[in-house]
Image 1 (cartoon, rainbow, N blue to C red):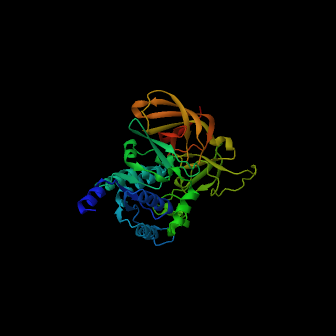
Image 2: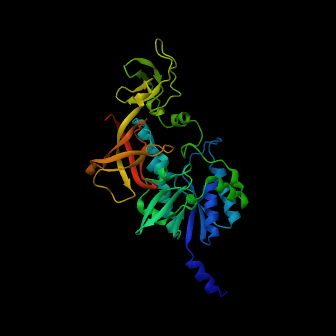
Image 3: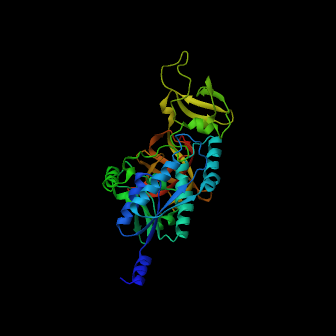
Length: 372
Protein backbone atom coordinates (compact mmCIF):
# COMPACT_ATOMS: atom_id res chain seq x y z
CA UNK A 1 0.00 0.00 0.00
CA UNK A 2 1.44 3.40 -0.96
CA UNK A 3 2.70 5.40 2.01
CA UNK A 4 0.43 8.35 1.19
CA UNK A 5 -2.61 6.05 1.27
CA UNK A 6 -1.53 4.66 4.64
CA UNK A 7 -1.15 8.17 6.04
CA UNK A 8 -4.53 9.18 4.63
CA UNK A 9 -6.24 6.19 6.26
CA UNK A 10 -4.60 6.93 9.61
CA UNK A 11 -5.64 10.58 9.40
CA UNK A 12 -9.24 9.51 8.61
CA UNK A 13 -9.43 7.15 11.61
CA UNK A 14 -10.98 8.82 14.67
CA UNK A 15 -8.53 9.46 17.48
CA UNK A 16 -9.67 8.62 21.00
CA UNK A 17 -7.84 9.64 24.16
CA UNK A 18 -8.56 7.27 27.04
CA UNK A 19 -8.23 8.40 30.63
CA UNK A 20 -5.97 5.65 31.99
CA UNK A 21 -6.18 5.19 35.75
CA UNK A 22 -4.20 1.97 36.04
CA UNK A 23 -7.37 0.05 36.88
CA UNK A 24 -9.18 -2.73 35.06
CA UNK A 25 -12.03 -0.52 33.80
CA UNK A 26 -9.96 2.05 31.93
CA UNK A 27 -7.65 -0.72 30.68
CA UNK A 28 -10.51 -2.68 29.11
CA UNK A 29 -11.91 0.58 27.72
CA UNK A 30 -8.65 1.14 25.83
CA UNK A 31 -8.58 -2.50 24.72
CA UNK A 32 -12.11 -2.41 23.29
CA UNK A 33 -11.51 0.82 21.41
CA UNK A 34 -8.22 -0.47 19.99
CA UNK A 35 -10.01 -3.59 18.74
CA UNK A 36 -12.51 -1.35 16.96
CA UNK A 37 -9.66 -0.05 14.84
CA UNK A 38 -9.60 3.43 16.34
CA UNK A 39 -6.48 5.48 16.99
CA UNK A 40 -6.14 5.07 20.73
CA UNK A 41 -3.83 6.93 23.08
CA UNK A 42 -3.72 6.89 26.85
CA UNK A 43 -3.51 9.88 29.16
CA UNK A 44 -2.76 9.40 32.85
CA UNK A 45 -4.05 12.17 35.12
CA UNK A 46 -2.21 13.23 38.24
CA UNK A 47 -4.67 15.16 40.38
CA UNK A 48 -3.04 15.03 43.78
CA UNK A 49 0.55 16.08 44.52
CA UNK A 50 0.88 15.26 48.18
CA UNK A 51 2.35 11.78 48.40
CA UNK A 52 2.78 11.01 52.10
CA UNK A 53 4.74 7.86 51.43
CA UNK A 54 2.13 5.59 53.00
CA UNK A 55 0.42 2.58 51.51
CA UNK A 56 -2.69 4.71 51.08
CA UNK A 57 -1.16 6.59 48.15
CA UNK A 58 -1.29 4.35 45.07
CA UNK A 59 -0.49 6.92 42.37
CA UNK A 60 2.95 5.52 41.56
CA UNK A 61 1.66 1.96 41.27
CA UNK A 62 -1.36 3.09 39.27
CA UNK A 63 0.91 4.90 36.82
CA UNK A 64 3.11 1.82 36.50
CA UNK A 65 0.04 -0.34 35.84
CA UNK A 66 -1.21 2.11 33.20
CA UNK A 67 2.21 2.03 31.48
CA UNK A 68 2.20 -1.77 31.48
CA UNK A 69 -1.28 -1.96 29.97
CA UNK A 70 -0.49 0.60 27.28
CA UNK A 71 2.71 -1.25 26.41
CA UNK A 72 0.70 -4.48 26.14
CA UNK A 73 -1.84 -2.81 23.86
CA UNK A 74 0.87 -0.99 21.88
CA UNK A 75 -0.59 2.45 22.47
CA UNK A 76 1.25 5.56 23.65
CA UNK A 77 0.73 6.88 27.17
CA UNK A 78 1.23 10.44 28.27
CA UNK A 79 0.90 12.01 31.70
CA UNK A 80 -0.66 15.32 32.65
CA UNK A 81 -0.97 17.00 36.03
CA UNK A 82 -4.12 18.81 37.06
CA UNK A 83 -3.14 18.90 40.73
CA UNK A 84 -3.11 22.71 40.90
CA UNK A 85 -6.56 22.94 39.30
CA UNK A 86 -7.83 20.18 41.56
CA UNK A 87 -6.62 21.99 44.65
CA UNK A 88 -8.00 25.39 43.58
CA UNK A 89 -11.28 24.31 42.04
CA UNK A 90 -12.29 21.28 44.11
CA UNK A 91 -10.28 20.65 47.26
CA UNK A 92 -10.42 24.16 48.71
CA UNK A 93 -14.19 24.19 48.18
CA UNK A 94 -14.39 20.77 49.80
CA UNK A 95 -12.65 22.05 52.92
CA UNK A 96 -14.74 25.21 52.97
CA UNK A 97 -17.92 23.16 52.70
CA UNK A 98 -16.89 20.92 55.58
CA UNK A 99 -16.04 23.98 57.66
CA UNK A 100 -19.55 25.29 57.06
CA UNK A 101 -21.37 22.16 58.15
CA UNK A 102 -21.76 20.52 54.73
CA UNK A 103 -20.78 17.06 53.54
CA UNK A 104 -19.41 17.79 50.04
CA UNK A 105 -19.03 15.21 47.29
CA UNK A 106 -15.77 16.04 45.49
CA UNK A 107 -15.99 12.98 43.23
CA UNK A 108 -19.05 14.46 41.49
CA UNK A 109 -17.20 17.73 40.95
CA UNK A 110 -14.05 15.92 39.80
CA UNK A 111 -15.97 14.53 36.84
CA UNK A 112 -17.38 17.94 35.98
CA UNK A 113 -14.27 20.06 36.52
CA UNK A 114 -11.32 17.75 35.90
CA UNK A 115 -12.24 14.70 33.81
CA UNK A 116 -14.77 16.44 31.58
CA UNK A 117 -13.25 19.87 31.91
CA UNK A 118 -9.46 20.14 32.04
CA UNK A 119 -8.84 16.57 30.86
CA UNK A 120 -11.14 16.71 27.85
CA UNK A 121 -9.72 20.11 26.89
CA UNK A 122 -6.19 18.70 27.06
CA UNK A 123 -7.25 15.70 24.97
CA UNK A 124 -8.70 17.93 22.27
CA UNK A 125 -5.42 19.88 22.16
CA UNK A 126 -3.76 16.53 21.51
CA UNK A 127 -6.00 16.10 18.49
CA UNK A 128 -8.64 13.85 20.03
CA UNK A 129 -11.95 13.42 18.26
CA UNK A 130 -13.35 11.65 21.31
CA UNK A 131 -12.53 11.20 24.99
CA UNK A 132 -13.19 7.85 26.67
CA UNK A 133 -13.26 6.77 30.30
CA UNK A 134 -14.02 3.59 32.19
CA UNK A 135 -17.29 4.89 33.63
CA UNK A 136 -20.26 2.57 33.71
CA UNK A 137 -22.84 4.69 31.88
CA UNK A 138 -24.38 4.96 28.44
CA UNK A 139 -24.89 7.76 25.96
CA UNK A 140 -27.59 7.99 23.33
CA UNK A 141 -28.30 10.62 20.72
CA UNK A 142 -31.68 12.25 20.23
CA UNK A 143 -31.96 14.82 17.45
CA UNK A 144 -28.26 15.62 17.72
CA UNK A 145 -28.37 16.07 21.49
CA UNK A 146 -26.57 13.60 23.80
CA UNK A 147 -28.51 11.89 26.56
CA UNK A 148 -26.91 10.31 29.62
CA UNK A 149 -28.37 6.92 30.56
CA UNK A 150 -27.78 4.33 33.23
CA UNK A 151 -25.39 1.46 32.55
CA UNK A 152 -26.54 -2.05 31.70
CA UNK A 153 -24.93 -3.23 34.95
CA UNK A 154 -27.22 -1.44 37.39
CA UNK A 155 -25.03 -2.46 40.32
CA UNK A 156 -22.09 -0.54 38.82
CA UNK A 157 -24.00 2.29 37.14
CA UNK A 158 -22.11 5.58 37.62
CA UNK A 159 -24.51 8.03 36.01
CA UNK A 160 -24.98 9.57 39.48
CA UNK A 161 -21.33 10.67 39.44
CA UNK A 162 -21.75 12.13 35.93
CA UNK A 163 -24.98 14.08 36.38
CA UNK A 164 -23.18 17.42 36.96
CA UNK A 165 -21.05 17.20 33.78
CA UNK A 166 -21.88 19.92 31.26
CA UNK A 167 -24.20 18.49 28.63
CA UNK A 168 -22.05 19.53 25.65
CA UNK A 169 -19.12 17.50 26.99
CA UNK A 170 -21.02 14.30 26.26
CA UNK A 171 -20.87 15.09 22.53
CA UNK A 172 -17.19 14.12 22.64
CA UNK A 173 -17.41 11.32 25.24
CA UNK A 174 -17.40 7.54 24.98
CA UNK A 175 -18.29 5.00 27.68
CA UNK A 176 -17.56 1.56 26.17
CA UNK A 177 -18.30 -0.25 29.44
CA UNK A 178 -21.88 0.98 29.60
CA UNK A 179 -23.14 -2.13 27.82
CA UNK A 180 -20.99 -4.62 29.76
CA UNK A 181 -21.40 -6.32 33.14
CA UNK A 182 -18.47 -5.84 35.53
CA UNK A 183 -17.62 -9.60 35.79
CA UNK A 184 -17.35 -9.69 31.99
CA UNK A 185 -14.96 -6.74 32.07
CA UNK A 186 -12.60 -8.71 34.29
CA UNK A 187 -12.97 -11.76 32.04
CA UNK A 188 -12.04 -9.68 28.99
CA UNK A 189 -8.97 -8.32 30.78
CA UNK A 190 -7.89 -11.80 31.83
CA UNK A 191 -8.46 -13.27 28.38
CA UNK A 192 -6.15 -10.63 26.87
CA UNK A 193 -3.42 -11.05 29.45
CA UNK A 194 -3.85 -7.71 31.23
CA UNK A 195 -2.19 -7.91 34.64
CA UNK A 196 -4.81 -5.60 36.16
CA UNK A 197 -7.58 -8.15 35.56
CA UNK A 198 -7.87 -8.93 39.29
CA UNK A 199 -6.80 -5.53 40.62
CA UNK A 200 -9.10 -4.20 43.32
CA UNK A 201 -11.35 -1.29 42.48
CA UNK A 202 -10.37 1.95 44.20
CA UNK A 203 -12.65 3.06 47.02
CA UNK A 204 -13.14 6.19 49.08
CA UNK A 205 -12.80 9.79 47.99
CA UNK A 206 -10.38 10.15 45.09
CA UNK A 207 -7.72 12.10 47.01
CA UNK A 208 -8.11 10.29 50.34
CA UNK A 209 -8.21 6.70 49.12
CA UNK A 210 -8.72 4.18 51.89
CA UNK A 211 -6.93 6.07 54.65
CA UNK A 212 -8.96 7.03 57.77
CA UNK A 213 -11.06 10.08 56.87
CA UNK A 214 -10.58 11.87 60.18
CA UNK A 215 -6.81 11.40 60.18
CA UNK A 216 -6.64 12.96 56.72
CA UNK A 217 -8.84 15.93 57.61
CA UNK A 218 -6.87 16.78 60.74
CA UNK A 219 -4.02 17.77 58.44
CA UNK A 220 -6.11 20.50 56.81
CA UNK A 221 -8.87 21.52 59.22
CA UNK A 222 -8.44 22.84 62.77
CA UNK A 223 -10.10 20.86 65.55
CA UNK A 224 -13.09 22.74 66.97
CA UNK A 225 -14.48 20.52 69.75
CA UNK A 226 -17.92 21.25 71.09
CA UNK A 227 -20.91 19.71 72.83
CA UNK A 228 -22.95 16.76 71.63
CA UNK A 229 -26.57 17.53 72.45
CA UNK A 230 -29.80 15.61 72.28
CA UNK A 231 -32.77 17.10 70.46
CA UNK A 232 -34.21 18.16 73.85
CA UNK A 233 -31.05 20.06 74.78
CA UNK A 234 -29.20 17.62 77.06
CA UNK A 235 -25.42 17.60 76.79
CA UNK A 236 -24.30 14.02 76.20
CA UNK A 237 -20.61 14.39 75.43
CA UNK A 238 -18.05 16.20 73.27
CA UNK A 239 -17.41 16.06 69.55
CA UNK A 240 -14.02 16.68 67.93
CA UNK A 241 -15.29 19.11 65.30
CA UNK A 242 -18.49 19.29 63.23
CA UNK A 243 -16.52 18.71 60.03
CA UNK A 244 -15.84 15.12 61.05
CA UNK A 245 -19.51 14.08 61.15
CA UNK A 246 -22.34 13.65 58.68
CA UNK A 247 -26.11 13.38 58.91
CA UNK A 248 -27.28 9.86 59.75
CA UNK A 249 -23.89 8.80 61.15
CA UNK A 250 -24.06 6.19 63.91
CA UNK A 251 -20.51 5.04 64.56
CA UNK A 252 -17.74 7.08 66.12
CA UNK A 253 -19.91 9.34 68.29
CA UNK A 254 -18.29 8.16 71.52
CA UNK A 255 -21.31 8.69 73.75
CA UNK A 256 -22.44 5.09 74.35
CA UNK A 257 -25.27 4.63 76.82
CA UNK A 258 -26.71 7.61 78.64
CA UNK A 259 -27.69 7.29 82.27
CA UNK A 260 -31.45 6.95 82.51
CA UNK A 261 -31.76 6.65 78.73
CA UNK A 262 -32.81 3.84 76.43
CA UNK A 263 -30.30 1.29 75.19
CA UNK A 264 -30.68 2.39 71.60
CA UNK A 265 -28.10 3.72 69.13
CA UNK A 266 -27.56 7.45 68.67
CA UNK A 267 -27.54 9.06 65.23
CA UNK A 268 -26.34 12.43 64.00
CA UNK A 269 -29.54 14.35 63.32
CA UNK A 270 -28.15 17.84 62.68
CA UNK A 271 -25.48 20.48 63.25
CA UNK A 272 -25.92 23.75 65.10
CA UNK A 273 -23.16 25.89 63.62
CA UNK A 274 -23.83 28.88 65.83
CA UNK A 275 -23.45 26.83 69.03
CA UNK A 276 -20.86 24.48 67.48
CA UNK A 277 -23.10 21.65 68.69
CA UNK A 278 -23.66 18.23 67.19
CA UNK A 279 -27.32 17.25 67.49
CA UNK A 280 -28.03 13.56 67.98
CA UNK A 281 -31.14 11.46 68.40
CA UNK A 282 -32.12 7.91 69.30
CA UNK A 283 -35.31 8.27 67.29
CA UNK A 284 -34.43 7.22 63.76
CA UNK A 285 -37.62 8.91 62.54
CA UNK A 286 -35.83 12.22 63.22
CA UNK A 287 -33.54 11.42 60.29
CA UNK A 288 -36.37 11.39 57.75
CA UNK A 289 -37.66 14.37 55.79
CA UNK A 290 -40.20 14.58 52.95
CA UNK A 291 -38.45 17.19 50.83
CA UNK A 292 -35.28 19.14 50.12
CA UNK A 293 -34.07 22.29 48.42
CA UNK A 294 -31.36 22.00 45.75
CA UNK A 295 -29.46 24.64 43.82
CA UNK A 296 -26.81 25.00 41.12
CA UNK A 297 -28.79 22.72 38.82
CA UNK A 298 -27.10 21.13 35.82
CA UNK A 299 -29.68 20.14 33.23
CA UNK A 300 -28.97 17.30 30.82
CA UNK A 301 -32.34 17.91 29.20
CA UNK A 302 -34.21 21.01 28.09
CA UNK A 303 -34.18 23.18 31.24
CA UNK A 304 -37.67 23.06 32.77
CA UNK A 305 -39.58 26.18 33.76
CA UNK A 306 -42.40 24.55 35.73
CA UNK A 307 -43.05 21.69 38.13
CA UNK A 308 -42.60 18.12 36.85
CA UNK A 309 -42.50 14.57 38.19
CA UNK A 310 -39.54 12.24 37.93
CA UNK A 311 -37.35 10.14 40.24
CA UNK A 312 -34.33 11.20 42.27
CA UNK A 313 -31.50 9.71 44.26
CA UNK A 314 -29.65 11.60 46.98
CA UNK A 315 -26.68 9.25 47.22
CA UNK A 316 -24.86 6.91 44.87
CA UNK A 317 -26.12 3.54 46.10
CA UNK A 318 -29.71 4.62 46.63
CA UNK A 319 -32.54 3.40 44.41
CA UNK A 320 -34.38 6.16 42.58
CA UNK A 321 -37.27 7.65 44.55
CA UNK A 322 -40.43 9.08 42.99
CA UNK A 323 -40.68 12.83 43.47
CA UNK A 324 -42.02 16.13 42.23
CA UNK A 325 -39.59 18.89 41.30
CA UNK A 326 -40.80 22.48 41.59
CA UNK A 327 -39.00 25.77 40.96
CA UNK A 328 -38.67 27.88 44.11
CA UNK A 329 -36.75 30.77 42.58
CA UNK A 330 -35.59 30.39 38.98
CA UNK A 331 -33.52 33.56 39.27
CA UNK A 332 -31.52 31.99 42.09
CA UNK A 333 -31.72 28.52 40.55
CA UNK A 334 -33.33 26.90 43.60
CA UNK A 335 -35.68 23.95 43.33
CA UNK A 336 -37.83 21.98 45.76
CA UNK A 337 -37.78 18.19 45.46
CA UNK A 338 -40.67 16.56 47.30
CA UNK A 339 -40.67 12.78 47.62
CA UNK A 340 -43.58 10.36 47.65
CA UNK A 341 -41.98 8.85 50.75
CA UNK A 342 -39.80 10.62 53.34
CA UNK A 343 -36.08 10.09 52.77
CA UNK A 344 -33.44 9.16 55.36
CA UNK A 345 -30.47 11.42 56.07
CA UNK A 346 -30.89 14.13 53.45
CA UNK A 347 -27.43 15.67 53.67
CA UNK A 348 -26.56 19.27 52.72
CA UNK A 349 -23.57 19.38 50.38
CA UNK A 350 -24.42 16.10 48.69
CA UNK A 351 -26.20 15.92 45.33
CA UNK A 352 -29.68 15.01 44.14
CA UNK A 353 -29.62 13.40 40.69
CA UNK A 354 -32.85 13.29 38.69
CA UNK A 355 -34.01 10.46 36.43
CA UNK A 356 -36.76 9.63 33.97
CA UNK A 357 -36.51 5.87 33.63
CA UNK A 358 -32.99 5.09 32.42
CA UNK A 359 -32.26 8.67 31.41
CA UNK A 360 -30.44 11.01 33.80
CA UNK A 361 -31.95 14.50 33.61
CA UNK A 362 -29.25 16.23 35.65
CA UNK A 363 -29.37 17.42 39.24
CA UNK A 364 -28.01 19.85 41.78
CA UNK A 365 -26.47 20.30 45.23
CA UNK A 366 -28.64 19.78 48.30
CA UNK A 367 -28.90 22.95 50.38
CA UNK A 368 -31.17 21.68 53.16
CA UNK A 369 -33.95 19.28 53.99
CA UNK A 370 -37.54 20.44 54.52
CA UNK A 371 -40.05 19.20 57.06
CA UNK A 372 -43.01 19.80 54.79
